Amino acid sequence: MEIRGIWITTTASQVLNSRQNIAEAMNFLAETGFNVVFPVVWNNGFTSYPSRVMRENFGVEINPRFQGRDPLAELIEEAKRVNLAVIPWFEYGFASSYQKNGGTIIAKKPEWAARDSAGNLLVKNGFEWLNAFNSEVQNFLLSLFLEVIKNYEVAGIQGDDRFPAFPSEGGYEQKTVERYQQEFNQLPPVNSKDPQWLQWRADILSNFLTRVYREIISINPESIISLAPSVYPWSYENYLQDSKTWVDLGLVDLIHPQLYYREFDLYKKDIDRLLINQFTKEQLPQLIPGILLQQSTYRITPEHLVQAINYNRSVGVQGEVLFFYEALREDNNALAKVLKSGIYSQPAGKFDPKEIKKSGFTHRRTNDNFTYINPSQEISLKAQFDWVKPFSEGMAAVKMGYKWGYIDKTGKLTRFRFDSAEPFSEGLALVKINNKYGYIDKTAKLIIALQFDDAKSFSSGMAAVKIADKWGYIDKKSKIMIPAQFDDAKSFSEDLAAVKIANKWGCIDKIGQTKIKFELDDSAIFSGGLALVKVGNKFGYIDKEGKFIIEPQFDEADMFSEGLAPAKKGDKWGYINQFGEFVISPDFDLAKPFSESIALVNVGGEFKEDKEQGKAYFMGGKWGYIRKP
Image 1 (cartoon, rainbow, N blue to C red):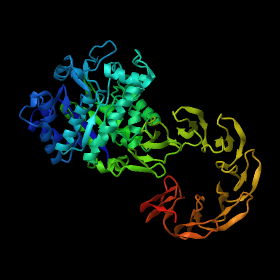
Image 2 (image 1 turned 30 degrees about the vertical axis):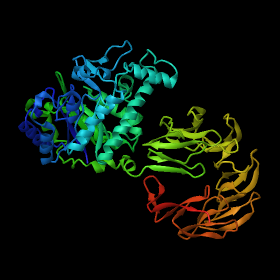
Image 3 (image 1 turned 120 degrees about the horizontal axis):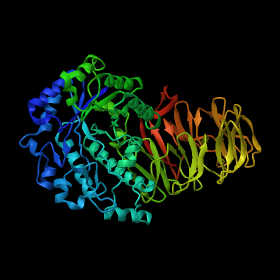
Image 4 (image 1 turned 120 degrees about the vertical axis):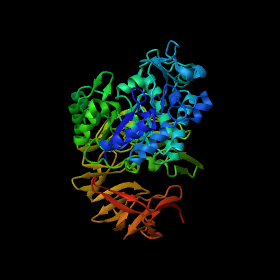
């Protein structure tokens, strides 16, 4: 499925003026090869549908231009007739008006106005702005989105370069200043582009987008959240649009950066930059760029348009959204004819929200939320994240979209910025950004710089790290304690660590001396004086002298904990004691070690192979906890 979209405006356009015009436009777009339309529903302080929210707040139900009609309902009916999806476009977002000193909204609710550092109404490029950090303003905008989602058969909603957005010159309203001062114990900088001040305000917008996303999919999990920001990082520095974070946190299903260049070479250059710096292979299906067809006296040439779309497909970009409809009709439909006879001549396929959602995180956010249970302290933390890891030393790694952060037991979060994050151990946590590993403390400050090609968590005051192709060990000051000389290495436990030379594993002590010969096919960490080892295709357990206490006989196994170890014979897992006897029958399809007298087990699941990534994943079945006998 390709995504072929077009924006329908109220400015310089007659489409929404009558049902006849709407029907003609929908017929024309379907015949040209489009499959989704983005009609404006919110601009200049008015909606283009009858809004109860607007009536109750401002006494104006609809843009007076459309009084007595419902252009959105008409457009949805006509679009449905020709198999076009409809995603309403909230054009003005947090902007209240254009060259109207705030318009009717700020006239009625002056406390909603945004302010610059001089205390003036925030104006940028002629647009007057609402305070995007004000909870009432946020609730108002959200109520407009939810009103449309609940009352109309639409495929989703769309924000643009004004949602979520806010000019970086703003944020100097009293409540915003007090909020910043409370967190940082200082006033906001006069320099509106101070890095901390930029990030703090951008994070407020990203957090609000998280709320918008969750509330919309709670009503309809198939609703598409579509955003058309200005180009990153310009959009971040000037309008606090941290669109890279939105994509990384899975807060947008389709994103349409406004690549409004008038030369193809500039368009191509920015597509290349986005693919290198902003979008990973997994995120690429979300990228559906915006292309400028017409603005003032400018109109794109047919050659430029075809070049841009062809380049999109050549690099794996499966669609675009064009700004805007009227340009297709100029010069006897010249641009439309080029599309219809060429790159849009083959059907795009029906716009399918389910297909789009496959590469996102909605399915995780509409099922039950994770609950982490800590039996010893009798607390239950309900975590509003896509993944969570158990608490360790008062902190838990949590994931949103593609990025990890940490949460403490009061609910305080660090920023989501890590590509991987391990539990805290001995006061430090192993993290990865891009392809390098380092260690942070509980304030998320990097204590050991991102420098290693691979690494393990600290244990016994040391951590295994990979430098170039070899493994060694460092201390907490990043000093090398055992030089990098091993082909693989595991963490220290009970003063021994398993290391690999060539194809065999042995164990060393903390000064690097060999304590168990390199004769094993695999070895795990010691626990309770025993280490799980592999010889041939079977697993058993050795003591610290390298002597077998339980001979290799299991098809798979895990470490001892609280006197028992999960072990597998044939297709099923059970639990053995330190004599190798099953004290819990092998009845499970997967079993994890005991912790505080309970263990996680699965019945009915199985490993499935992902050939593309060369990994196997355990999927399906039912999970539950068992208690020690």
